[in-house]
Structures are given as C-alpha cells and as structure tokens.
Image 1 (spheres, helix red, strand yellow):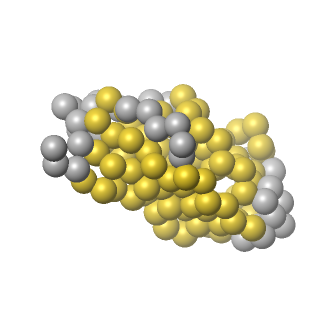
Image 2 (cartoon, rainbow, N blue to C red):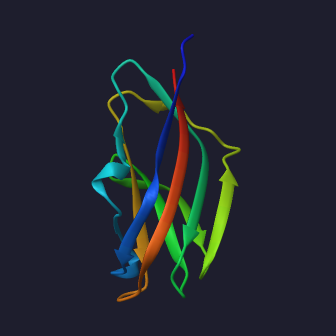
Length: 115
C-alpha cells in the first residue's frame, strides 16, 4: 500500500466574527480527498497570537468534525487517538472561531495521511 503524507499548514492573520461563527481561515487550508483514496487526520498543532481564546475547527464536507481550542497567546498539540477514515470525494477544511473584532494570527499544522 502506497501512503502519502499531507499537511495543511501556515501562519494566517484573522479577525474574529464570533465564537459561534467559524469561518474559513484561508483557501490554502482546504483539501479535496481524491476518489478511491482514504484520508486520515493524525494530529493538529496550533498557535494563537491574540489575547483571547480561539478555536480551529476541522470541517468535513461543510460539517464540523473536530474542535481545537487554543488559549490566549498560547499553543496546542493534539495527537488524534481516534482516527477515522475519510472517503474519497470529501473536502477537508480548517475554519476559525474567534470573539467578534479580535485580531491576531493563527499558526496551524494539520497532519494527514492518504492511502
């Protein structure tokens, strides 16, 4: 079985629209799983430069799948112990929920494997 490592990662500025209103962080943080392939998310690392709690949301086909809260001026590393198969034809995205008007930068690193 051939496996391929994939990463959605980078540093992105944000302006919060509200903790209850996750929005896409950037178009670069979207991945289409090719047909006939299985994707598995393995870990998430994130950092938050703002003075408030933010939450990065892993979204699968438009539906929130996982929430990764990141404290004020803090970071987080989450090795995913429950790894689910994501079928080909799916779209994986990272969104951000932050208090309204809060500005900062978020560092994201989502590690995945496809086979």
